[in-house]
Image 1 (tube, rainbow, N blue to C red):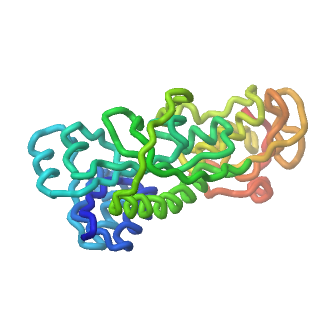
Image 2 (cartoon, rainbow, N blue to C red):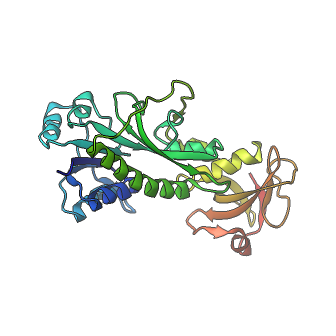
Image 3 (cartoon, one colour):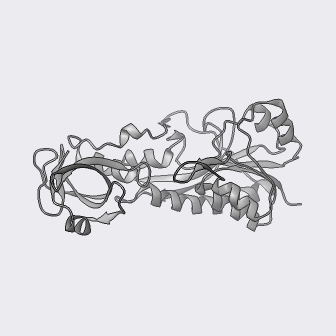
Length: 308
């Protein structure tokens, strides 16, 4: 008999895992997702999450509670009589009553090599720290923050110019395959759990928009990692004097360059900028209200006098 699964997830990252679970014949009896949020240009339209929309395409009931801490919601969850809950970037804390409700427990897909980068933004923090690899890990959830024992792991290399958006997509697809394999092992009663090491714990705090402004006094490699680590959101930025007018510009991609000069100095006509140590060539930029452009296209209509 196929496992009865409750899937709990919200963003696009979680969608391939939901699709894979359904595609492999597991009975997804319900999906939990964050409530619809205001969106659109004026923020007046309520928009369902990507997971919510995908579940509806498959005709699966969707629940969007604001909290799982009240007795009514907990009873609703228990009444689903699930064998297992799969939790991938859901966004709500699961209280003990929820964690203990499925017969086989709750399993989480987390995008890091635990215990490194527990928390909200493991993909971005790994790139910002200059890590050369990460992973998607399947773990059995407990009451701690990403502290449960690990069942399976698949590592993914972080290449020198990879952005968080690119890594996000790769981990999402890798995680879909891994989650299905984990469910198969769970069904066969052959899934082995290993406790996380006590050493090497780091926390991936949510990205704050205040982190996004580039400080050219920093070493070039650190700025490069910031740029790719918060691409596409919220996007690293600086101010530039363009055609004699100060503007805010997002820097979407960059390259490390062996050059030097006073920090924030423009070193050549290819937008190579001196940093505290070494320099960066700005590869892709976006003016406020504009589209992303590679540097040569950007410079056709913009004379950059200063970078601030």
